[in-house]
Length: 92
Image (cartoon, rainbow, N blue to C red; front, side, top):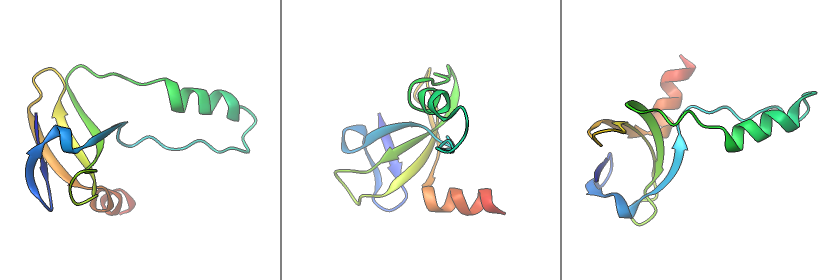
């Protein structure tokens, strides 16, 4: 699979480290059910079959963190953007 880095261009997926589902929000450690929330945050994933947004780190390249939208069934890639750009969009 080839992933388009916004800085470096298209690169082999072996240059990247996969973090997982994009958009997860870290639980509040002071919440009454913090232990259960952290368990779910770390271990429970949607594992979507189809279009999903994922976090990838370009470890053996520019070091950027990017959000990739792809189809997990076909590995077709739709968009790739810096995490910082994605965060700016979400804060509007």
